[in-house]
Image 1 (cartoon, rainbow, N blue to C red):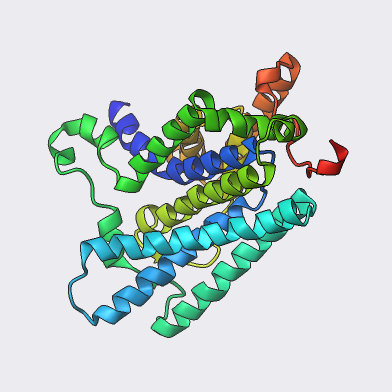
Image 2: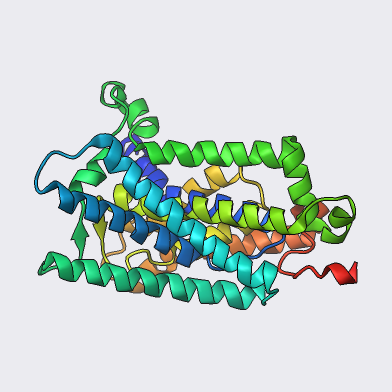
Length: 331
């Protein structure tokens, strides 16, 4: 049993880190009053932008050894730029043009997945590989490098130190976001924008600036989840439509954590474990039972949503102006 737990936890963490990135980014976005259902598309774009940057860099080497600094910075910067552009597009449509946020978010998801599949398919054709995938082993090895003492600390190192640097960055971002939202003036003003933009506007807070910055920052964080999935979890292998429903699970986690970034750390690991539980529980040839296990993350989210609704506490509710465009003339 102990060996099972030790082998299960690292896989649950690795599975949960993309969810943690997506959840943290969406919480920051929603705290500004923007409901971005385009997170799955943003994660997809973040992943493919990192792949494009890494692919072009590795091809220019011509077999020469990869520079560790450039091998990390190029896909990282590419991911950040691509994710931020997605955030800017969303903000321009919903904040500046006041388009419907639900429709815009769903359109961004469709656009992001289509964009990723287009460029992914194009790169696959450039490689001329028989298998429809791209392998970026050299770059992946840099992202997957663990702490040097991880192997010498037994099960403790396997559970806590056997991850790439992006996993620890995700945890630090979630803790930093929680501190910023709850302990700083910027966080207070951001929450005021999400709760009552008219009052915040009357107090001299720039609604447009806060919505733009929060949404773009949230998209960049979510995009890093896509980069982690490709470069770390998937060992640098890109295949079209390989992300599955992780983006939607990240949005579900926002409700599960009740809009608290710090709570998203254990929640993402829990969801990561539930997501892969069907691989560890023997079900034989009974595929119906395996599909039931795959439903666990969504069932848990529904149960939490029902319980929080029954308690009906203000702190358990989403920002009051979530999903609503702000018209200054209505103030």
